[in-house]
Length: 81
Image 1 (cartoon, rainbow, N blue to C red):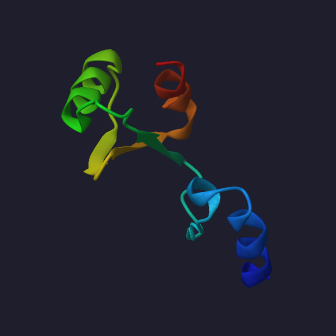
Image 2 (cartoon, rainbow, N blue to C red):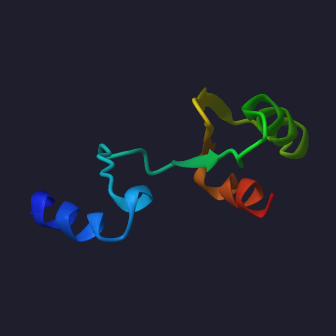
């Protein structure tokens, strides 16, 4: 099934030809991955997010992405930002 899915996705271009595997997760938390726009510093995005979102959350930097883990009811604050 995965092989057929990748063949289909590869026709959509290089940015769409990938696979992400996730575990069972945590019902109380939401993980949001934010990609940094070209020409923007990942540290700037991280700093802006920390200043804009006042409640507690976990944040980590992965190359040109910021990964935010929030309690599910509070995730809307990050999405709105």
